[in-house]
Image (cartoon, rainbow, N blue to C red):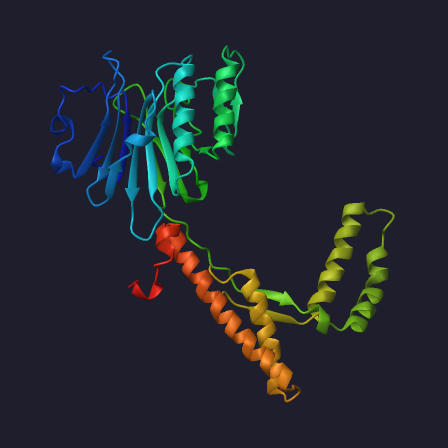
Length: 351
């Protein structure tokens, strides 16, 4: 923890019980708020915990608890959707009851808005996970029903398992399930102090938009097609030269190179730079904006009448109204404002 300084720590098999105080194992000097779910059966072992940095607002979600060793914590972050983090422990490979209780817990969290993470010791040693995060049941598995239930569980709840390297004795037992794979930047495995390795995860808390690079767009409507035809026709003898000894791929390569050279010479291009995306401007609004701009050009050139001018002004007001509604809806979704609050919502009050 001193080396990596994580914001969230998830642990399983804590072996803690009601006789152990938080301050004994998680002193305040560490800078974390501890959440625990000790084994309720009274048997030795088990137990899960989650540590969250003090700078975050975190609350234990008891309503998501089911009859297995699972703990849910909701982490609220300004200007982001909430993050639901679960610590889960499945004691042994043949424990089907814990898998069924995990399913019940996921059913409870399904309707909640936000990103979901489920981490812990799942004890599925007969799974192999490829680079595309697709599971394969290894030969010699004697519990196909249990393993197939888990793969169906992932599909039903739109979860992706991210760990692809062994975490204990040549097996991938410790898993990381996420509802949004695009936020995860990196996953690494490190040697731990127990017989399990440690998984470190680097992740964003909200999606980022990638700016489109400047690019050339061919303007085929303004192309010199007569010049292009003559260019390709003149190149025909060179393309067919030695066609009897050339392969199909080589002939195709010569033809394709000629076509591209003709496009570069006779088709003009427009250089498009990157634009700052406005996610609340929908395709419908963009179409209306294009229509408005065409009417404006028509009015500017003096080729319009009173009806055209009225259409332009009506369309201008319609676009303004639709952008306002779409922008409010976009902010409501980010700030998790429900339907009852949305009627009172005013973007002008946000600073």
